[in-house]
Image (cartoon, rainbow, N blue to C red; front, top):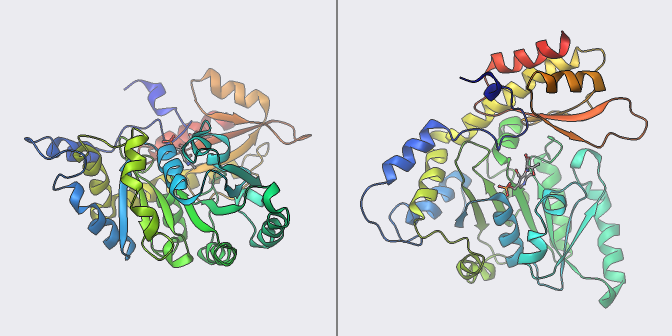
Length: 354
Ligand SMILES: Cc1ncc(COP(=O)(O)O)c(C=O)c1O
Ligand SMILES: C[C@H](O)[C@H](N)C(=O)O
């Protein structure tokens, strides 16, 4: 195996699909079946997700996290509305305007927060100010939070519940970008229900791709008085958006394989463990600064410039980010996955320390 295949820590998006997912796709590749989600596999999605989340749900599989987020928000927010999110939110910075496009013009408002986790105390004044401006400003109609966050941290279930309660009191519905939900659950050692609907989340973007799928995400509506009216038109929104797969069995097969025996959580526990292995080594390095808690499969570190260049020269791949003013060095992100072996993490650390 080419050495550099094991040196790519850029993202959990660079990994292969896990073997069980590929096997599930092969197993689904059998004969003719009804299309557009009417196949036997796809007709089990609501039940299977309902079992995993211990709730009554309606599920819509899509192939990208951006589609899941943007189509979910299009059902939650009118074109004249706005979405309250963290300033670092993926929907706010890295989805190419898809949320604004699919909502047909809603505004995204990112607020500052420590470590990518919105502080409940910051919500009431923000919501009050929005309301005080009347027709001059788009009304907040949804709160969107990312679990695990873009900085590799997680929200405690109690914090999500606090945020959701404030949002609901002000007439907002709550969306969760769960592209790395499995990693958050693995860290928090909670149930999928605890960190979602039991904490007030109305609509979830369930992330399968980073947990080992080839390309499988799902919009999960936790059915309640707020969400039931949203579900009716969802298939039409997805079709209009070009995200309704004709051969949906192949996307559904991926999701069901991940849910089988909690494979998604097993994959995420391994990814988190590999990230902690990196953290233990980086923590001991005298010239490395770790600005955030490491609570998922992403670790952010400030490295000396020379070491960044040295890692690059050895074939390592990772993203770099603007480093806070006056902080010597470069902010980098290493991401681990189900595919990361202990020796891969150790090799990176040895290169750093050598
Ligand atoms: C937190 C988060 N949300 C959403 C997405 C969007 O996923 P996709 O790249 O599949 O559109 C990503 C991307 O990897 C992500 O990191
Ligand atoms: C950063 C990029 O958009 C992708 N969400 C990732 O986490 O790699």
